[in-house]
Image (cartoon, rainbow, N blue to C red; front, side):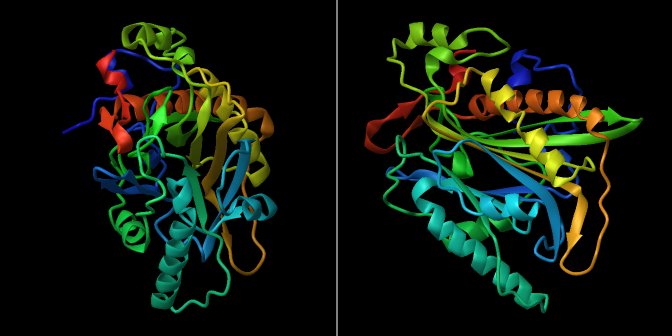
Length: 341
């Protein structure tokens, strides 16, 4: 059954046209897979964003990362910013499972390279995290190789959002958060390009929460009679595009992620880790030999900047509206936004 997303509740976010699915996978070649752990003790999982149909270790993708607030434990970002490429899918999970997912990601690529008769002596897996300990017994580390491999095998274009995969135990603005996505189409010199966003949302305070600039958090707080928590948690934002950009231009683009977060009421507090990763499918980088890249003029970036902010805002809202009420570990509960819309 088709999921109800924020636009299905009558909210129109922004003015740029959306892609066919309004998801990160509107960028050709991108797929997303989940594995969800849903037991009385554990509400967690792993999500993988596959950036291309072929092996990214062989032909890398131009990329950048941006740390908005560095309260986080992600792996692989240092090399992205040094070399301007990714050679790995992007894996999302909970804080204490970073090491196990990293190990599984390495094993998966070793096996793939062995099948393809490729030598592998170094590899930079990208693994990002948010802390789902409010709903999940996080010290019981249940995400490992089997779960990572299953998420990879389950990757599709039209993927599920909400409390699935890495998003199963996440909270957003003191309601249920998780996986959300959106996309926008921009035209530059009569050519259409796609910008897609996927978020793992686990941040924000209820009293700050906004939808289309309206203070829905204060309305919900009055209904729930809930004490407001300080801004803490985290959000991971993955940006995919087919725009011809350099790694420097991708860095400029993803620095606009905080605009979209602020439009939902986040101020990115001390205890909240915000990380953005962006890649383009346009400028591929071979393992050997010289190569050329194509890039637009910087003066044409205004449209992508605006469109990205819209997509981030909508992706956060989709992560919440697609999530169900969840009772987690130790009796803690997060209500669904859909109960109040």
